[in-house]
Image (cartoon, one colour):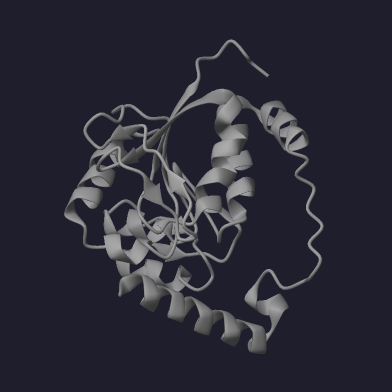
Length: 220
């Protein structure tokens, strides 16, 4: 592990209604090796979809232009930004300059809306993945998808796997292994229900109804 390397510069988009774990999972993975820039339109508190407030560290104007990683999380608030000209312009501006253009969960739909996934394989939360094709992306059923310098993670908890994949690329396998051990990331889920196939039709139907109701509530 080359500890003498300069810290990675990572721009992570904040927005109202994001899913906190989408962002905190990879941010925790990166934290020993990076300067994290939490970016939003203003520096006012931004509240996640579960009501936790986060403080942006910079605005679209003050975010560094040369980023190692441009990152977009997903969340129930993502849909409200799909036609937000200011957000899409920021992503479209920083994306071509970033070493890696990345997302977790439905954040990939925002990358697509900004024109950054056309012709690339990408993934998203299982309930949103098929929507990627509307932006010229190639929906791919995998926990982490790497296509050239586009790296996308599946839903929520995939952010930790996603972060370790990127960290290994940028700082080597040993750095990623050290981080995984320090986080004690050795999952043993109590149920085999983490994918539609494993959960079965009844649970999938309940999950879709719950998510639809949550989207409707946040949009009202």
